[in-house]
Length: 165
Image (cartoon, rainbow, N blue to C red; front, side):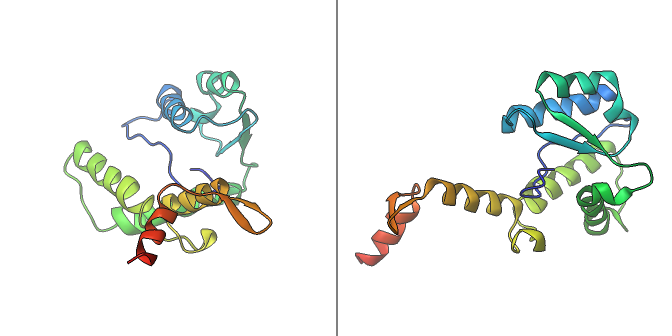
């Protein structure tokens, strides 16, 4: 999860929790986001996050590892909240016949609902993708003496075409 936007960046479903599976998910997230050096990667104390193979991926990409303090599950509160929502909104009261059925349901929940539609109070009641898009739009807009000197792609053309009609 990107704590800035609450977006789930990468995930996996497996019958076991291994360092290699977790490292693969991390490598995919790194590939997708290309984070800057020094990024803090926070996890709980699970063995899959503390193994040598996983730590090597963090080191290779110059990421700083951070883990919960012993006995303080609130240190990882955003993920705890996410898993609570996932269980309440998708899992409870529902059965899955196969791992593929569960994988399909998780993919749909994460990629088509949670990241695109689910509103989060911590980011202004936006979805994670909507919040990221707004942040990117703001970043592209450069203001000089109160005037926009660089327009975001598409938006101003759309607004301008409405005014001309």
